Structures are given as C-alpha cells and as structure tokens.
Amino acid sequence: MCDTGKTRVINGFNTRNYEVTWDVETENPKTHERSRSLMTTELWNSDNPRFQQLRR
Image (cartoon, rainbow, N blue to C red; front, side, top):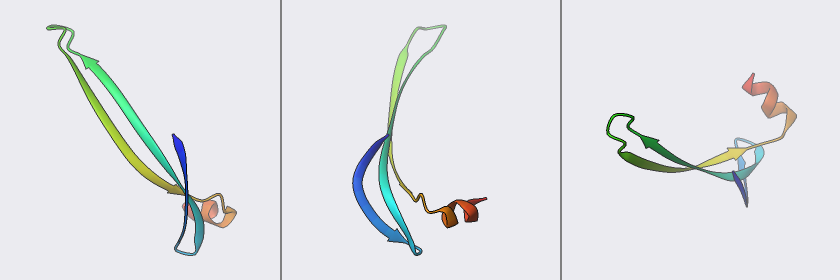
C-alpha cells in the first residue's frame, strides 16, 4: 500500500488516497502451468473518529 499524498473532502470528511497493488502468481499443480494476475486499486480513507463511528 502506498500513500499517494492526494487529499480530498468526500461527504464532509477529509480523506487521503492510497494505492494498493496485488501481484499474484498461481500454479496448476497438475500441469505446473503458471499464471500471473496484477490488480491495482485506489482507496480513500479518513482517520476522523466520526467516520469510524459511522462505519460501525
């Protein structure tokens, strides 16, 4: 996970942007064929206690 440094107000909450990348390699146990999947996603999160309370 990487903090991009971007900030934005979303629904009244100050948020920070994070980028998460998953790099997954799998292998078929019978054929030993390997494949690779790469996924990148953006997350916006807030450390505001009110936001945490609303999530519960």
